[in-house]
Image (cartoon, rainbow, N blue to C red; front, side, top):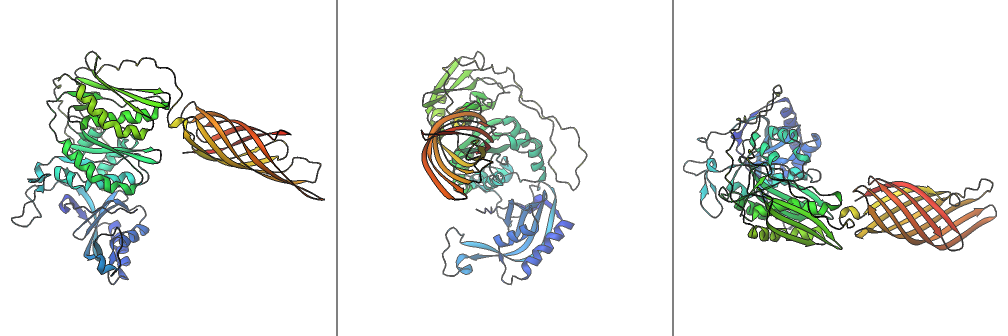
Length: 587
């Protein structure tokens, strides 16, 4: 799926100049248009440029009044061109094409290409509106909010998404009407991208209000929209949240499952509308809660993923100001994971920050993490309704050093010491969460205990067949058990003094018990059977042999990559052994 986002950005926010690279892009664009008498549709035009200049990033593409914005080699460029909007009927008369916009931009002529040298704030007095025309943006629910009165919102990439989807999701958020009506969207530029990479933000998959707020300060934003994507079985979990920069407060968020990037555009209007409505609530007089990224054992990965959603769900109730653990608050969030047979349980609590006493508690029972995700909003609402958290006077806000506005210079200035970024002062640190009561040790009940894999191995039976090649795959519908299906290919008898050729095929199936010791190491044992077909070729002729056999097998998986296995195979008249080593790819 190719996503082209249409956005309107003020050209005065940039200073453009002609450079050697922009001349090269202009020459390529002109050559591309030279044979197109009737012009080119926008998609073939952009694809044509992308083939000539590898690395063009359409994730930062904007279309406005014949100006196409994109990035190449970490620089922003604008292609000035003549564009005509044609309807579908004019492009393909009489043909109905599902999913095609009613109006399609056609590039008729390219006039110039310029490079964005720096970013400047447009003076409030300057306006591109016609005389008598208001520049205010319609506000949700009617009325209008002048641009200068709207808080600034920076939108960061979503780590964890595959390929370029991280940037694409951020771009799609930036064109949502509910967000644009409530905030002034801070444009992405080279300085913003550099700040994100410098902070290592793209490697973080959890809510880190401090890291997000520091980036917000660097780009002079009032709020920051960010999030992450987590692979969840056959689906993806999209988590998004808005952080208030000056207080580090998590003001609103959302989490939803989706199958592929094609599902995202239809989801975002609802997500953006909900977050825009919640984010700007005044919570200065509400009781406050702190949280820190929850860390569980490796065998409790699903419970940990659910616990990370708890602060987002609690913030959406609108009953608390949710702050990072470095802040002073009346209470803090606590979470524990339990495994009870075939059922999983997440126990969540709100505790008093002064003495650690429980203010409210709830539990969430689930078999699959998808069920837990769906029930999380109701759990948070119930927990928030029970808690009576004392209101704590906020610590005096520190005076932060002014952060210079980001610029995109042709040559970076020599590195200087990074200005200190003030963080909320903790008047009284939240107490350490008390250790949970010892629970009966249960077998792992998470993805770590499910072995979904494909692989190949080589081995020997030390007789006929002397060489065995195997391809196999495993299916794990339940925890700690898997079905292995594969086939052995055998060659050579191993008898040096006989002129005998040999080959065999042995399709098999095993049911095995799997015990993980971590997410990457585990042992298994099981039993099964198969059907052996073997052919011996002697100088006098060929002899075929076939039989059913019973297998008993055991093995180990290392680093989710290497396997070592042993199989005892018998038809109750004779028996042989198979020892093999191989490569495993685990899903």
